[in-house]
Amino acid sequence: MIAMFDTQTEFLNRYDAGRQLADALGHLKEENPLVLALPRGGVPVAFEVAKALRAPLDLLMVRKLGAPGHPELGIGAVVDGPEPQLVINEEAMEIVQASRAYVNAEMERQLAEIERRRAFYFAGREPVPLAGRTAIVVDDGIATGGTVRVALKALHGTEAARIVLAIPVAPRDALDSLHDEVDELVCLKVPWDFRAVGLHYASFDQTNDSEVIDCLNAAREWQSI
Image 1: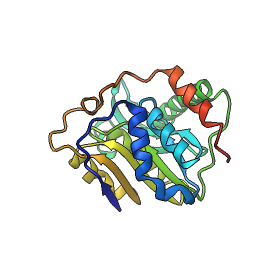
Image 2 (image 1 turned 30 degrees about the vertical axis):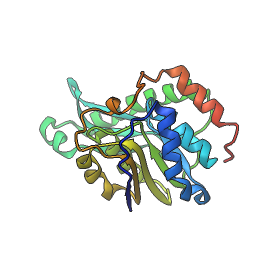
Image 3 (image 1 turned 45 degrees about the vertical axis):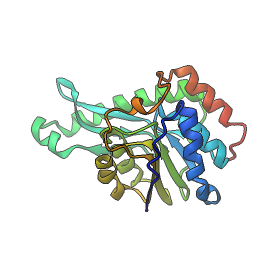
Image 4 (image 1 turned 180 degrees about the vertical axis):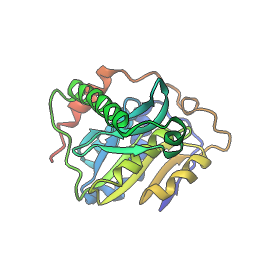
């Protein structure tokens, strides 16, 4: 199911985008959803969605696996969770011929970085259990969809009951490339002249770590696991 509202108004900021997105997701409130934000920019958006749905808020952190000697070249990615998921870029692996030992070591290195960041953001709190729940993946927008695609592929290896992708703005070609990865896709704005996510926000300042922590702490007021 794809719902594209194509509103022409710009969002005041990420919180405003989240409130508008929440209005389009009200039908999911009774599905015991878990809202998963892609940090850092997706967190304020997801905060408003989780608040409206009275759902737990967690992070879905993705780390690229760099090629041997060329860390900027991604040969895959790992996504955190109770059972971290590895997604391999087979085309890149064919080019660089990375060994399984290298991939395992790089995966462990990136998982350690994810754990460091999770400990910083959550102060030791465990990830929210996903099994049997509707997972709502939220970001502040999509340009190419590369990071979101990896996150969604990884979620297919979990016990989530349904996977929903909810975003304020994205180009049509990116949405077309993602719709087979989800059970439901909700996007508020699909501009024909898309150039960058930030151009559709009146205020698009970088989300910092303090803001992420504030949102996660505030969400504890209503979430019950």
